Length: 234
Image (cartoon, rainbow, N blue to C red; front, side, top):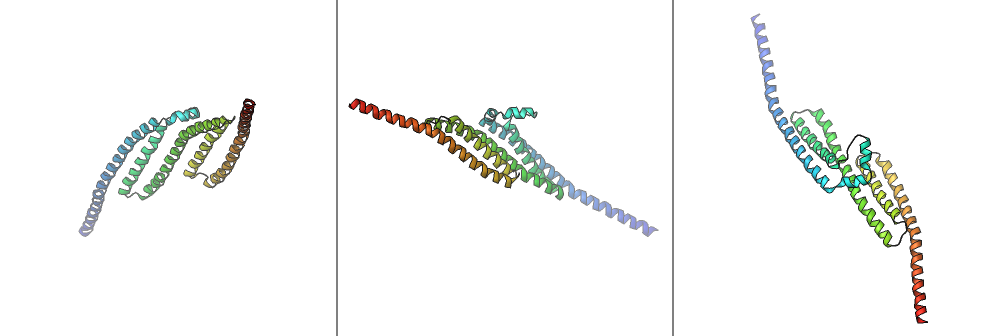
């Protein structure tokens, strides 16, 4: 009987020792994980504010408002604020990245792998948003340049040509963003080829029709100059 009680005491002592060893090993890792996560949170919040200010200083929202994006978002219950949106994406990417590091310290492999998939996809979302923001700025500038060049060439449909150039950039940007997000990549590539051909034909037709008027004006101008010279010589 005494031997049996002694065996139980030894078993309990060993169990408590193993439990204490596990706790003693886990607590330092937990503290390190908490420090890593808090550091990531602070860095994410800081970068959120920096990115938001930088994007707002570029005034991308003004270009998006010209395209009525603010009305579209307002219907869905959102306000147009590209800086806030992009800053939030950067913040959560940083937080998730540091959270992965913290969970790795805790050796939670399954959760770490899941968050790694999210962390890999978040940069693609950020790049897609940057593509669309760049398109908002470039499309406006290109439209003005094309309209000015077309008017300088004497084309009567200069506004239409500028509109084609503007939406061509937007279409390419949207397709590039979808490919970046890995949404129907093969279909987008096929569609891209078709749209390039269609835009080329539209531009060719526009310049062709406008070029006829420009050529006619040029011919009339040359003819009138020749007639004036003959009149003066006579």
